[in-house]
Length: 453
Image (tube, rainbow, N blue to C red; front, side, top):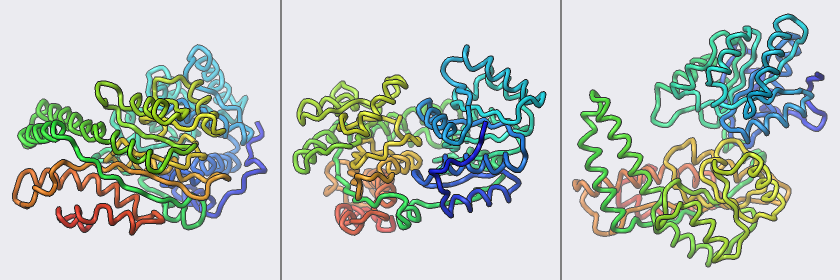
């Protein structure tokens, strides 16, 4: 294998700096780089630099999804590598990997590259092969924040000397312990950070407009939200010492979150928005995993686009095969498919640079999710001067009747708005029309004492 940086790639200054910092930290560390700033290229250039120094290297690349692993396979080939595709058909890759490990250990080859997924990597069959690999191994974990989770974290091998984690957001939402475990494994340090603001300011990512749209819960949803919140409050103190109470509380919290994700009025607001502004090619619609009138929200939105607006729209979810997803991305890039309606499959690193419009119907409060979703629409593309993001912000009904800061309902509403406004702050702060977007929520922020957000 002729492992080298391809001629058509010229590393940027920040990529060189990231590599230097990682090498200086005993060849371990996390790179916190905004989506679209070239984490994959940086990682492979880093691996090439390490191989040049050591003349012998086993590389294991781990990603969350098959689609993302396929992208890594493609980039590896651009670097002159012949990676083992260690996901999907185990009957094919398992003996191939066994033979490569034996050849590496006996010195018959100096370079082995394996690309796999989180699910395959954590399986006993793959872990048994990991145990046969020596310390001269570089593990590259893309979207590394997943490995803060206990079940994945314990699969990370202590024997590997060289460790690289890639992520746009290393901090795990509401999981300080998991975050600490993650950072500890990768050399106790985020060795380099390149923020979204820097990437936009320096022209590596597209500038964008941000339009928030207020969506009221209907009366039935509001009643369910209040009921669930009261149940959660009753379980809160017990949950600190009672595992069953904690589990019950988490289930109720998930159920409550789904009310926000699937708020029925989102569809009405979406219809009015599309009637007013029109529907454009290269539009991406992010849905929640809930339902709209007994139909999955993702299916309801796709049918709405197809039937009411005559748009060629396709679903992009875990139900589609890898082959179908690849075809959908190609069709979307060419403009034949005008819109993709997704749940979570487009969150992590999958390249859709042609995207010009994003509709965030899902209302995620998880920073990892909404930062990744914004990243999908900000990648540079020859046909894109700027991007447009529409965000659906959920608020309870009858806001004008909520006036007392001592009232339980007031505090409940304030807590919900705070979650939504944290996302608003993140998005509006870097938007071209940030001050204009602020006008949409200013009155609510003043009314509920959230002016600091």
